[in-house]
Image 1: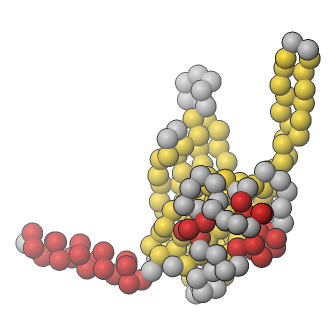
Image 2 (image 1 turned 45 degrees about the vertical axis):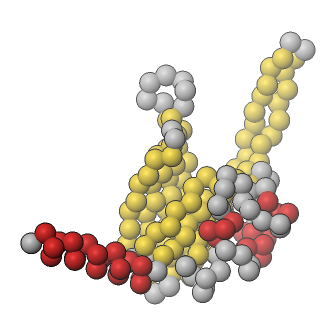
Length: 171
C-alpha cells in the first residue's frame, strides 16, 4: 500500500513537470511607466533570470530600476490558489489558465510595526494571453502619494510615484 502511495506521488510530480510551469512576478518601479513600455522592454528576456534578486537583473535602463516584490513558479494548471509568507509579508496568489489566457490576482499583506494586528494590504489583478515563453504584462497600476519628513529646520513634503506591474511567462 505504501509503495502504491509513493508511486502516485511520483506520478503527480512527473505530471506537473511535464505540464510545465508559469513564472509570476510582481514588480515595483519608482516612476510612472505605461504597460506598453514595460512589455517592449521585456521582449527577449527570461522572467526567472530577471527576477532572481531583489532588483530586476537587466541591462535595460527601464527594467533595471524595478524592485521584485514577489516571484513564484506555479504549476501550469487550470486553477490554483497559493499562499506563502516572506518575512513579515503574507502573499496570496489566485489564478486560472484557460485556452492560453492567464488571469491572476495577487494580494500582499504586510505587518506594520505600529501595535498589534496592524496590516498594510495591496492587491493587483490582471489577465493576458501567454505567448510562447516570452514574459507578458498582466496588469499595471500607478500610485501617487505624498510623504513628509520633519527636521529641526522645518518639514519637507515630496510626491511618491510608483508603478506596480504584474508579469508572467510560460516556461
